[in-house]
Image (spheres, rainbow, N blue to C red):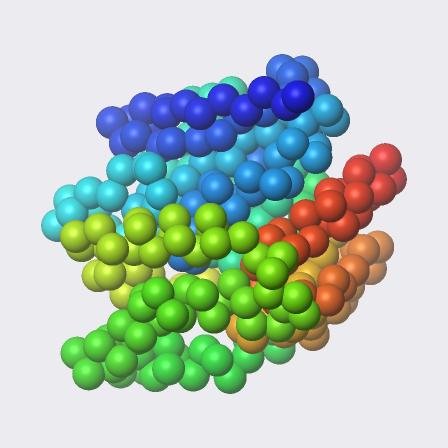
Length: 284
């Protein structure tokens, strides 16, 4: 049996919920989730790695069980989210650690790496993009909002926040839908239904352009520091394309790139395969 504990850290007055497993003293691995999920997306992976790592999976600010203050009290940008998670790692004593980044967790984690390159021991990117060629045409409605942040373009993005959109994200590109547990997308929809949650997410859709603007900085970090790097990618992801995974090799020639035959939320169907890839990767 694997003991997983559920805790809340006070980060300068901001409450960050997190899951923790593994023994203190084991190699540290920080798990950073994506949209529209929370740390529960790692519920299957954590038990598969807890014998080897000290694992911590926080809910990002505004997600899951972490604080979601009003937009008048907290600016929902990726810079601000990364700042809170940076302080979170310090509060819980994660001084040197590897990162597992997915979707929104990628620009969060890459910011930490650029800011503190000596703290990052390795990077696992599961559909965590850092290259223009990794962005599909599915981003076009969001790009339109970047170019013209009008009310009409903002309202057009509300369709991404509907339950059917969440279900589609979990199931698109999956060969056997019976392997996708309803637990993940149902809980995501619960959090998305909270008062104010939609506008928080729309703010982050708008600010995602800041991540694309930082791609050159992320790539410069990869070229300069060449962290041990594993990209394990759901190859049928409708948002982050396989060329985005292959692109890491340009800046980190020794990067390992693997594809699994599934969609965006690869852990829902391939947690065992991804855990095996991680276990194989770390002895290197």
